[in-house]
Length: 221
Image: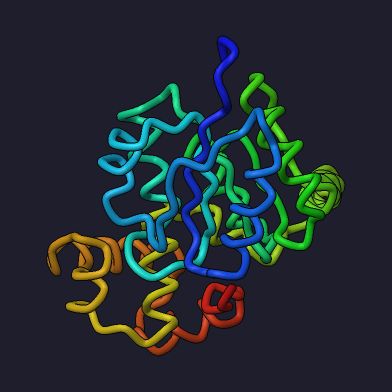
């Protein structure tokens, strides 16, 4: 990084976690926390203002879907590296992270020292994944080689935005509220919902909500 500290922007709505990251980065001369956000809303604009090298993003927050926000960030600021940090390691989350151009996926249960080390490695151009994530990828790889279908096989057909709409349907949000939260029009939400129903072969909103719950999409971080 040309001798300057690695600049980190933390996007997470859990104050305790953010405080822990803030306190630890203050002890690391090679790292600098340049901003803290409680949602992914306006992430691209915030990144342009704070100019971070690494953006550490939670996956379950109010507001704009973090995966959709990361996708936009990757398109507008490809030099900025996104690393997801979550308490959940599920196939559909991993898929969405990879599709969003993430450089890493870390588990919130990891030791803070490991998270700090991972940030440094990403800044050097390495991809990083928690041991729990790597274990999940290996298990999934074995299942794929055996030709076994995974629980989330249908979810893999959905785009990150469609997964987010499905999650909000599972949370019981109205189409108007979903549109407001995602900063999209109601018509766009209806289009996403229709695509979801077609891909999942589900034709009722209640069934969609039940499917989302079974797949763990309504879990809170």
